[in-house]
Length: 272
Image (tube, rainbow, N blue to C red; front, side, top):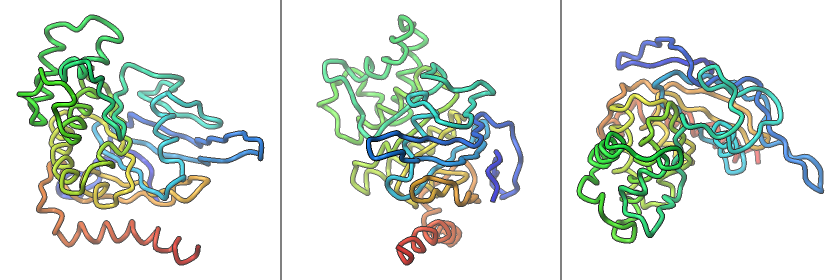
């Protein structure tokens, strides 16, 4: 099993690239009145610059805990997590995050919500506004910058949330089931748009998801985690190019990769 950073071009050949994220022997333990709970144990993973990696696993396996540690929102108990060679010790301006809920501020227009990460550090410049409008246009919301959140559907708000996570041009994009609350049709449509955004932006992305098909569609590699304590049990390469259309959903290789991931969880159900 390889956890080293690799980029997989369209021809399927592995091309090693410099890791942006380096995780070594990462562990997380929570102390409770009933004793210690180990959420993560011995996580080792490299993620290359420009790579899209998904993490799948059963509920409670520590997927979101891992994301929060990488976001600087939670402290690790053991091990190291590095971004660009620097330890992650707290929130950083070079990280963008989109959660399952869009969390749009209802009294602010969409363009103002998108610009919020910039405003937390400086007064938005015309260049920031131009980037925000360009991102909204990229996800099909170019005409909705002056709208309020209650005038947009849930899917449209989630698209705006992706723009907000990217507006300050972060090195790393963290996605915690951003489309998890949406219906299947809307989710599929947004995954196509997310692939387009990632392909054009060249950002490094880490997605937490319960959807195997979503992970395979979006990712270059899929990390499979065990039940708690969360450990990496497999890292599966996805042999498709960066730019993807819905036609790959019916490609036999897509089904084979999804089945390879699914086998890990079928085994757990049989043994449970």
